[in-house]
Image 1 (cartoon, helix red, strand yellow):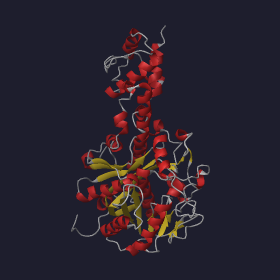
Image 2 (cartoon, chains in turn brown, orange):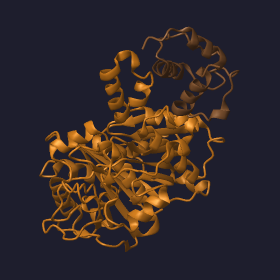
Image 3 (spheres, one colour):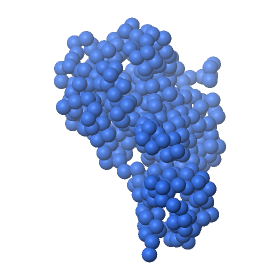
Image 4 (cartoon, one colour):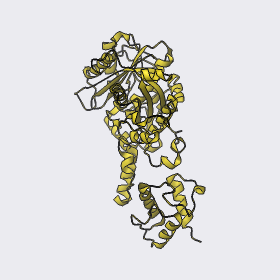
Length: 79
Length: 412
C-alpha cells in the first residue's frame, strides 16, 4: 500500500497545525479551512516532499485528501 | 478638540504584554518591578553572529497562544501582537461578542514588521528560486498586518492602521489612538506595538552601526541605562497592547481603570538619521507639546519612564532634556535595563508599564544601574522598586529619523 496519504498527512501536521487524527481521506481542503493561499503553500511543500511538479490548480478547494493522493501519485518524480 | 475644555482623558482599561520579562502582563510586571538584570540570553537564530544576545522570549509558544491551525500563517511580530491584544481585550472586561465592532479601532506600532519572514523567504528565493517563495510572504511581511489580524480576531471594524516611527512607533500608535477617541470616530481602541526581528540581517545592521552593547558574554549586565559604563542597547522582541476608552465611558460601565492617558506630543529633530540632536530641541518640542496637551505644568510630573536605551548618546541627551524641562524632581527609570530595546514595541511596553506604575504607585528600578553617570543629573530609581504616589508620569520615545513621541499618564 502506498505511503502517499500518511506522508501528505504529515505535511499537514508539520506545516499547517493539524493533528494526525483531525483529518480523514474524505475531508476536502475547504472543510479543513485551507484557503487559496494555504493551498499554494501546500502545493510548494508537496512538490518538495514528493519530488514532483504540480500546477496551480492541481489541488483545489473542493478536492478531498484522497483525491489529492491520486493527483500526487499520477505525477512523475522529477527531482 | 482644539478649543474644547480641559485635557482629554483616555482610560486604560485593559493591558496585555508579551516581553522577555514574561508572557502576560502580571509576569512581565513582576520581573520589571523586581529585576534580576537584563532578561537577555543567546538568541539561537543569531548563533555565529558577532552580536548574538537579545531579550527574546524562549517560552512563547505561538501554537498554544493563538492556536496551531492559525499560528503558522502569521509572522512572529503578528503572533506576539495577537497574544497581547487577546489578553488586553479580556482584561478590559469588554466582550467582542457584544460590542459594536464598527466603533472599535485598532492602532498598533511596529518598526519593521515581518522581517523574520522576509529574511527566511529571501533565503528561499536565493536557494530554491522564485517559484518556491511562500504565497504568504506578503501578508506575513507587510508592516500593517498585525493591526489587520487583531481586527479579524476581535471583529474590530473601525479605523485600523500601523504607525512606523522606528523606536517611537508604539508610542505614536497609542497617541494616535487617543486622538481617534477624542475625535469621536470610535469608542474603543486596541492599541500598542509589536516587534520581532532578532534575526541575522537586522541585528547585523544595528551591530555595524555600533548601536549594540558589546557585553555579548555577560548578557544580564549588558543593558544598563544611565550607568557610567553603558555601551549600547540590547535588542529585544515583544508586544504590548492597551485598551483605551473615553474616561467617561469607562466610568459609566464601571470599568477598572489603570490610569488615564492624558497627553500626547510629537515632533521631529530634523537633524540626523540616527543620532539624537545633542541640543535636545526636537525631543523638547514633543515633551512640551505633551504637557500642553495634558494641561500640566512641568513641575506636576512625578515620574518619567525614560526612553533610556543604554546608548551613550541617547541617555546623555535625554537626561539633559529631562533636567532642563522637568527639573530634578521626577523619579526617572528605564525598563530597558530589564527588557532591552524592542524598537517599535518599546513605547507600547513602556506605556503599559507606566500605566501600571501610576495605578499601583510603584516605580520599577533601572536594572544594572551600579554607578550612575555623573553627567546624568537626575533622580534615577536604582536597585529596587520605589513606592510612591505617582499622580502624573510621562513616557518618552525617540526614534531613528529623529521622530519623537511622548505620552502623559495621570492617576484615574
